[in-house]
Length: 129
Image (cartoon, rainbow, N blue to C red; front, side):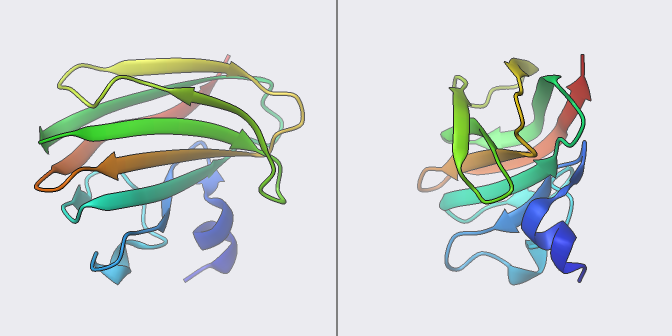
């Protein structure tokens, strides 16, 4: 596994970097798209945003059950949070959030699954504006 990818994510693509206890450990370092997340708790994903000033994050689930809450945090490489954005719980429709970045290098995307919930993302991407 590429340690840089596992820690910071890839440019424009969300990589799973943290999972709740009991989740499949092979998810860490893998792209979020198409992965079935089935264990309750917080999943953390990261994408690099080097050189991008204005971003729009697009997410859409291809399948979900229960309550799945997304949140976004733009951070500096040292992990210091700059700004946060939360969205309504995951639904079957596309959701978007826009951010203006001033020096942030990483976008952290978390999905919090309540008990008896699951989600598979069809779309989770960053586009520069």
